[in-house]
Image 1 (cartoon, rainbow, N blue to C red):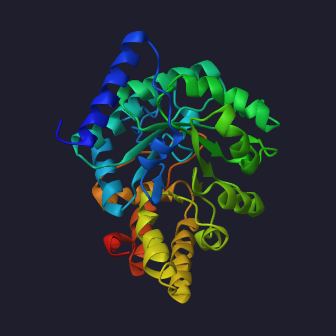
Image 2: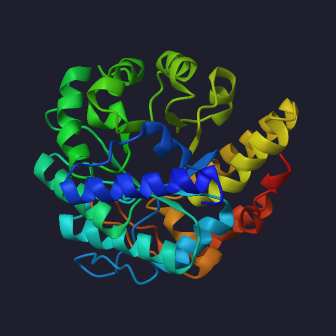
Image 3: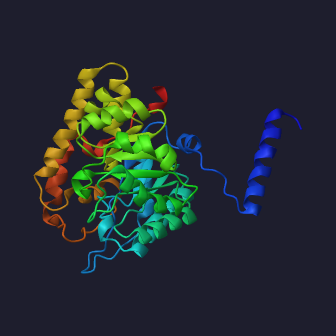
Length: 348
């Protein structure tokens, strides 16, 4: 042997082979799983493409173009499917097909995206099935909301709900989708969950935080920022910088990755608070334009970015009036919306 490193590697390979032969699973390592996650997460939950027919048939044929656009914007983690994806309207088989398409596009195009398979549903058996499928197709992690109709009222109940889902993909890390305003799990505190998780559910390495409870966020970041991936979703993002950045941000749409990167990396980290506030204001200005249009105007802009028609959303959402698309594009143009480029983050 030429080096101590080679000896260590041979021992690791031998241990893994013995474990496989004997049927003994290699223990899950939260620290190893966390190191595989991008250092600064920019999480995108992509819209689902539906055909413009009565059934709103799932269409995965343009996922490669969507994945390429996501990477170009500077997003690096994809959550499939999320709330914007209308996951609650998708069947189990549709969710499997959608995830498989994103994983395949990422690998075939060598985009380097980290793919989180959201498997949450009110039927735990379906969630376990989706978790197994995520592991089979090569997702990097799984995630779940709590049960919604009969939601957990405390951390112990939530951990009991999540445990069999995690067991469906025992070698993959798990993220919790904390969106209490939608799920009704308003009694769940992330600080309490992460305090209990290391012993009760070590696969839980991260949280998608979609809550206005800034005290819980603050306490969680102070205690667990080095051991877990805490991802902040609410606006303004600047408030999370002040109380604790976490591991990154939930962008929702990938076209908000450039402004987040400028706000955080080019301005906030360098002490230019005025420029950071201007960047936050830019996002509010863009959102104000979208708010002037009914239906689903954000789905329409991808036609300009990559030529992909996402089609109409599924009910109960309504599509945007196609006759107003050119007006929407014209309203966004003065803001530089369609000319966004991510900053050079290698210089930070």
